[in-house]
Length: 241
Image (cartoon, rainbow, N blue to C red; front, side, top):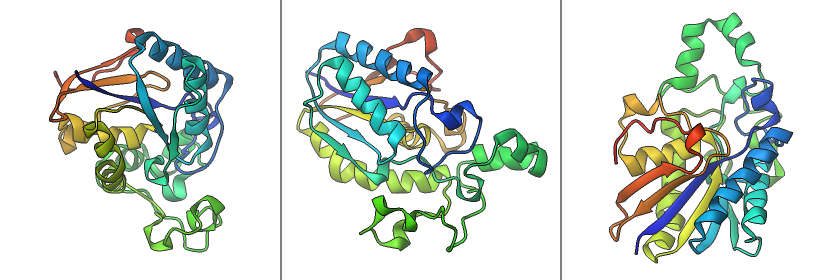
């Protein structure tokens, strides 16, 4: 029997709507985002495949998405784990800025590098910037040296993968079907690993909000199939599996 892993990018957030860099800023879902999360739950309920655990970040938009998904699945009892390692990529000093205004200020080429290059992060937050995660109570108890002031996709992957190895992989090896409700870049990092997407190609992978991505894994946890459940809003995964 195949093990199933589902990834759901949170529904549209308020800052998605406002075209602002969000990163670790804690914003909530829009009405559309709520509807997307509920639709994701309805699609997953139709699978009826015995999911055992659910994981999410410590950011409201992902947590609320997971709650809505599980409510629609009638699985609110499912064990849920929050982990800061599943947070969105940290956009540093760009967080809160309008993307178009940032392009106007720095130029399209520079903003494209910050957004889409694999290993070039945006400008970092200053150590005393109140937006720095070390001042956020949800990260108390974590070594401040581990908390980013900015991240590239590469450094996001380096944050996500130890959690994959420590927590997610053992549950999958045990045959547990799991759901991860997280963010565009933390999920891109996992997709890069699972689908062996190159550094060059991963920059073109765009994961739509609120559309469950279903992976079926064999006994060795190699990907057998992967597909979006809402085919009308599916995007190219860049590979054929």
